Image (tube, rainbow, N blue to C red; front, side, top):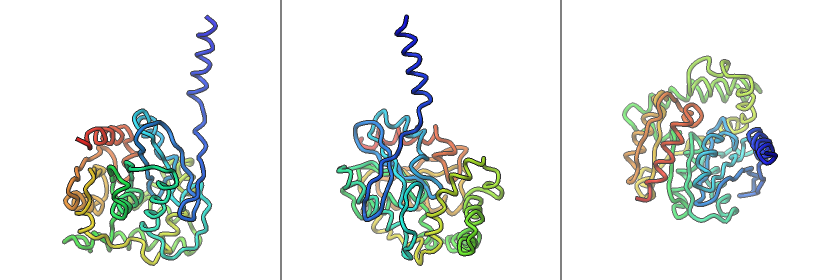
Length: 296
């Protein structure tokens, strides 16, 4: 049974194959790296601030069975080498990059799945270019300035800025990137989270410190979001919240679901702000079910 032995060798090689090397493309004047898997309707995955194109491995494995899945690194995330010189960097910049990427890849209407700043990028682009978007999955987009309009929002916003954003900005300015990232990671989870992570995970986070550095230098890191613009959205939208997330993100998600006409909501158990990586199986299943039923 020589053919059986050959098949076993091939299966073993596949099981231990290295992840695919990303492709570099220039869009909106910057380099963006991406990987693509599967065929069918395009589905673009947008990572959060601490991640990059590699962050979606569990989701790609499942969703690429049904869609052409594209995972890309946003402009200041690994392994992109874009000059870190802008002062007006914000989610609006990232949304323009995404629209340019869609056009460069000659895609038509796309499904967007984003977490954290990736979700804010997807939402912003959907408002600016609604004809490019078939559906939206938004896992805790940090619409922090918008939160100031909730009754308890100003206190939540001030707490975030004083406890996370401002100390991180000072640490970046002092050249202490690790301390800056500790403020962000612990602030989104709990004290000691950063130092308790495995060394390889911390190394991956530090590879993406450039995004947070640019946010700390921005003169408008969290721009206002027009509620009327959200009401104009007509595509199906799923808003995902981690069961254990911090209060400001929970409240933003609640208001966001109310503000978008066709929005549904879902909670990922045993997960905080980073639900795609903290409970990947539950997150993927929720997304898959939404995509299967969003056209109905």
